[in-house]
Length: 241
Image 1 (cartoon, rainbow, N blue to C red):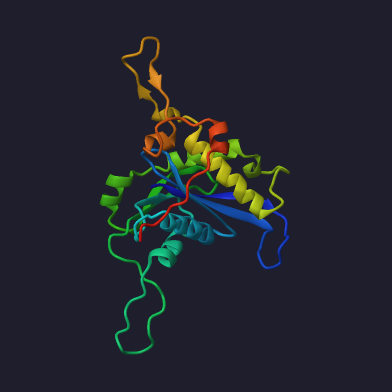
Image 2: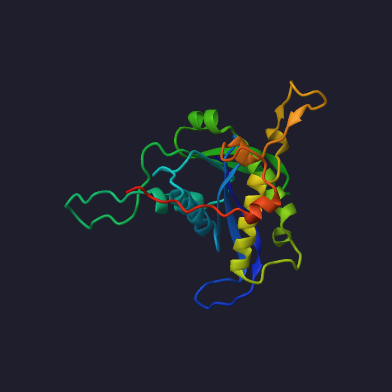
């Protein structure tokens, strides 16, 4: 899954207990096959935003280890992985008991770092394996974050709150979170993705069948309308235990 950061709009300070002023970061976890936005986190820095995104994965029943990840060169994701998925080593009986979580086996995380010259011109990319072997990571994840960068562009086109150097920033952090949730729901369920369309051979005059990321991920069997998205109430999950 590609995973990356995007700088969010500014927020005015309302609650002294929570920093709501300045730039906020947004971490989006994207499934490369279906283009589904799996989780989104917003925080005052890259680590906090990634931490929230990984915690959402856990609440939704994801496994107890991080997914295969490919991101750009920004930091914070590896620190959040340790906080959410890391394990504190058992105490050996000598010295101070360990308190810091450590990475576990079978973690896979690759960074694609853009290399620029002294004038800021793009020269190429450098692959930096954080967890796992480089050859194995490239074989599974590839070496491009194009899907994620295109998703970020779509987000900025959808929401004026993410447009740089404008006055359309959110005045309250809670309102910005609500806007991000609505945007991801529309992206996943309502908006057909051109790269996901399927060829149609048995219907004259029709070449393609459109699909949304949610349809491609088999989470639904049809493209939703905005009315359906606004009126349908999801049922709460009930445990059998």
